[in-house]
Length: 82
Image 1 (cartoon, rainbow, N blue to C red):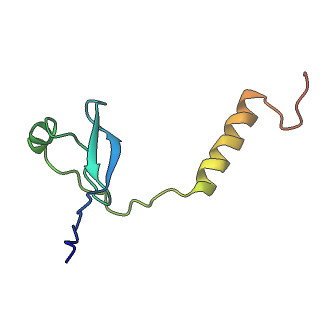
Image 2: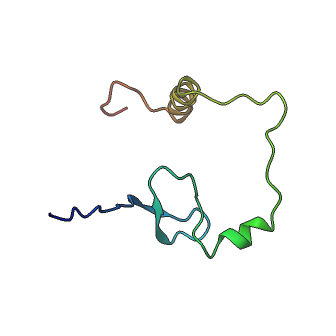
């Protein structure tokens, strides 16, 4: 009788630490954003809360801002020299 070997795989993904910028591996699907050495350092800070009434800006707001910025800078969408 042949023995069937079961292999367990752990899927990892490459991630950069949002504190120190170092590269590390985390399990796929996890939401950790800090490497192992930065987790205790970040635990010292209070967890930020959302401001009341604050809305998340959508892409439309970003495009509107960029258009207004180009207008103020005198950049036209047609291209060419002024």
